[in-house]
Image 1 (tube, rainbow, N blue to C red):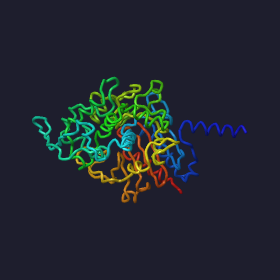
Image 2 (image 1 turned 180 degrees about the vertical axis):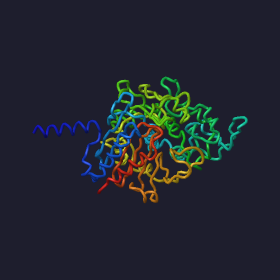
Image 3 (image 1 turned 90 degrees about the vertical axis):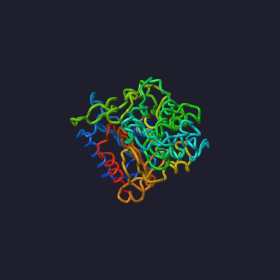
Image 4 (image 1 turned 120 degrees about the vertical axis):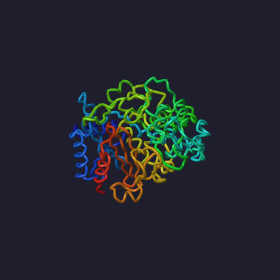
Length: 438
């Protein structure tokens, strides 16, 4: 009886921590050898100091069947990585912002063919970049022929740039000093002001004619504010975080949680791991002078960028992804309809960039673009362990997820190292799906 009580206590405790029930990986159809390979790989990456630390998680048939931390959360203090640590989610914020926007789409507040300028007038009459005068240091533009439609915002086809990622006219885009991520604590900036400033820059291409990774989800955050009336952070807290019981997902981290935030690292010129600082961000990514790696210390902030600013953990994101696997519902909380979730998963078109960076992809990708995600098409999946139709996204500091509806499974790997070591996350994913036995 005592042993049974202890087992029940442990089970209840794990459930409370993860928010999803736990299960045995073998009973869930994974092989012992495959899980051992995942373990060995993540262990080796920290042992070899390729990354400081990481967390791997696998969820199948609605149960957490693998969750383990490796290495260090902070190299300077020697603090070991724990599965409850908080991470800067960076671009893995985008899928949450997209779901928030789709909630308003479901409510009939816009269609995918609604012009963005009808909601945010600053985008009504845009210019398209056609050249750059290196003598006058000025953009050469012409009026856009097409309107930016809401479907362009959801699919990174609007032509709205991430300023430092644009190649043509790069100098002028950077000089505009647009805050596109990680706003400084107590900066006084407002999302409306940031988006209005971004609208003054030319589009990198005609709306709908190409795929360019840009400030689309930041713009969507402002659309949500304009249509709903609440601040973008409050909308996420009340419409997504609270109903899904994502109780440790933040836009502005409470002071009592600061001790649980992992440190971010980068690879220095001497090959050693060093702390990723504001200056590193400006050198590597062209962050503006109004950005800061301490952006998350503004507790309960009312300013957040929809593409970058979520702080969270593996357990909370597991609840969010299980909601998507459940076609929009978890534990009685309905976030989206089944048909709206199906929209996210559709492979819409090839990812082909005209200018700039496509989340680590230049030129033509082997993936298809979906709504704020990459989707594995049939041709690519022929040579992968993951199923065709699976979709994924990643964050700049090393977080990544994959959702495979055919296998009723998703997996995540979280670390805090930028840029990500070549092939690390891809090999993790390959090993995880290679562990499926039945």
